[in-house]
Amino acid sequence: MLRSGALLAVGAATVPLTGCALFDRDEPSPPPDPLEPLADEARALAARHRAAIAADPGLADRLTPIAEAHTAHADELRRLIGRPGPSGPATPAPSAGEGTRSALLAGLRTAEQSGRDNAAKACAAAPGDRAALLGSIAAARATHLEALK
Image (cartoon, rainbow, N blue to C red; front, side, top):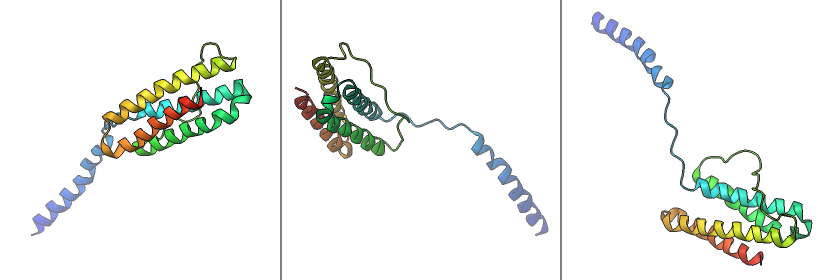
């Protein structure tokens, strides 16, 4: 009985030492969520609308609600994904002909068209628990196109 107790004590002392190796292993990071590009795109679209407002403040009443919608979509997609997005504001890609109102709006329409198409494709490929959100994002982007005419 003493031998058994001694073996158990020695065995219990070695278990924590071997268990520590479990924390030393690098675990692979989870694969990217298929919605991450859409969340990043929503963030970039919001930044692009804000840049257009900065370039032509007369567009603020028209573009601010659209920028806010894109920000809300990015936040909700990130919540669904379960991972925070990049920190700091997104920087929009410069568009050709920036400066004139018609050029700004044309660039935004092109970006919104692409965004709507991407959201519709993501909606069609998404499982049911995500399709409703993606469908509403695609619909919102379609209304943004109308507001930019």
